[in-house]
Image 1 (cartoon, rainbow, N blue to C red):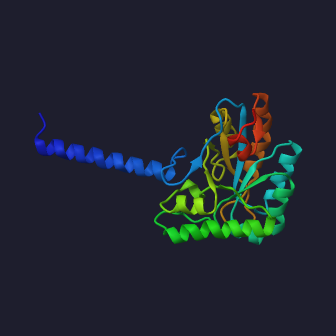
Image 2 (image 1 turned 90 degrees about the horizontal axis):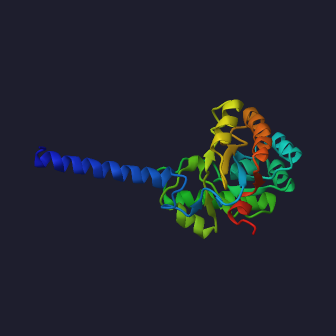
Image 3 (image 1 turned 45 degrees about the horizontal axis):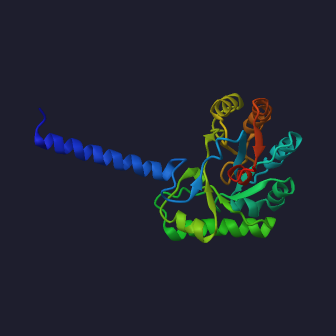
Length: 240
């Protein structure tokens, strides 16, 4: 039989571990809405998915746009304000090709332990940059690295932004095309929001060749399974 101090220690440890797990879920859990309003999938009754691309625009974005146009698919691009200011013509191309824009912060920081003022400024600066360059005022926001933090919810509400996470993340910043393809294909389900990248934070001329190759294979493979492709806004507000 355990002693009373041992029991108390066990309960304390369980409580601490439980609190830690809850905090981790709040900050990084795709389905969490504890720190900010967000969605991570569309309706499970719809045979539809959304392709999303983060960290752009970049010098590599036009090649991806060409592929999507060839395959007649539109997606949602979560853009960094600093990249939009650096590459305004490419930012506008995304809109001109019929894609949806979202806010991905201004400088792609990690929001851990950042002040409410810092978080609010990052979202607002990106919102302004995207609006000025493209004429579009985003209504969607994806946090860099998927990190939510206290103060983000208030910032989103001030800017009328809905947070968007993902159902499946392609890990295309580190995987090769074949692995990206298999990872996404095997995890995709009705209403899935698929997270990929057309940039690498604020890096100039990033190599997204594996992402493009994976997307080239994914789109026809998923269409063969009966999926249709929509923007995030279309996916979360399904047509009857």
